Image (cartoon, rainbow, N blue to C red):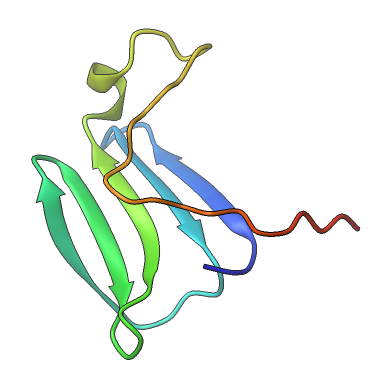
Length: 80
């Protein structure tokens, strides 16, 4: 995955989504109860991870640690 990482949290729906790269046409699949992967329709590349009932899954907002159902490799750090 390449491109900017975006983190969006919908407080009303208690849904967290972490996405990387430019938005593309995707399909979603539930890989674990309440955890979704969105994949690019053409390349099958993982574009985002979504987590329902996010606050219920963490102990403290100050110390968030989540095990994602995918491996993400950060190859290069680019600063502006």
